Length: 55
Image (cartoon, rainbow, N blue to C red; front, side, top):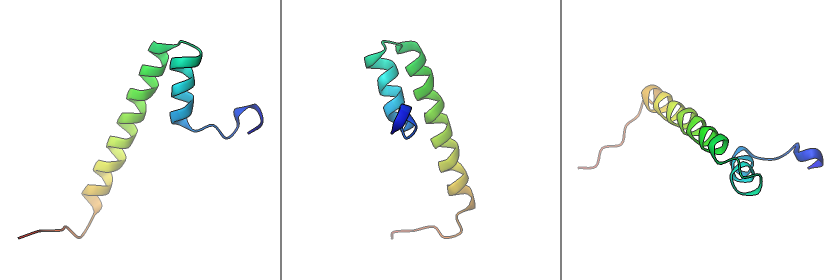
């Protein structure tokens, strides 16, 4: 989009790492994204009412 208004987080991390050679900043962004996704997954698993059991 205009002035990168619609750039996704993953693409922004890629651009930081491999186009602008900001490897440390991109790594920090990737770790932060991992923490957010891990937290969202744990919250979803915690509040999920139905569990699937195979047996």
